Length: 146
Ligand code: RB5
View 1 (cartoon, rainbow, N blue to C red):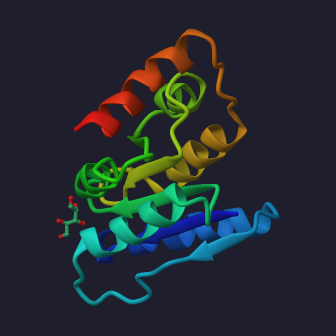
View 2: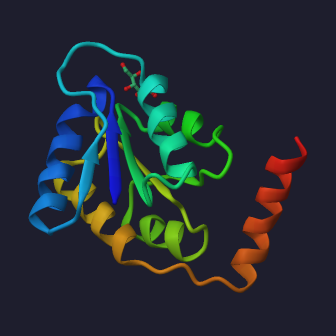
View 3: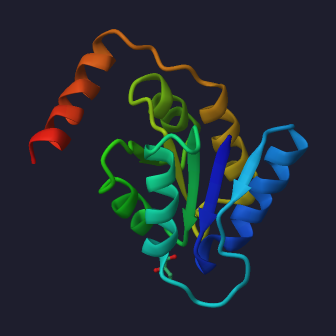
């Protein structure tokens, strides 16, 4: 199951992505925010990231204004590989090479149509493993040592 969350800066884009995922038949959990009141993106980023890292959700999508705050906070959670993307090539590579388990989009910098294509591309891509797994193992080692 896919989890999705945003702050107020990413709310409209989150709703667009949600509608796309639902119409494509994905099971989805919306972890908020659900109105335009100003909120703190770490609250939503930490909650979703911890729940992906624990295995409660298979993967997650985070949206804030630029995507920067959400990507910073998500990558603080051990086990999370969050990729902030704004182009299709990076969305594909984030899965094929980095096995990103959280996709991050900037709702104020990425058009709604592109946001949906980024999500579609990331979901359809497959992790290539091999030499890329070895590199991810080094990141896991870092998490376990520090
Ligand atoms: C909220 O105004 C904004 O700072 C937030 O959505 C995000 O862009 C932070 O990185």
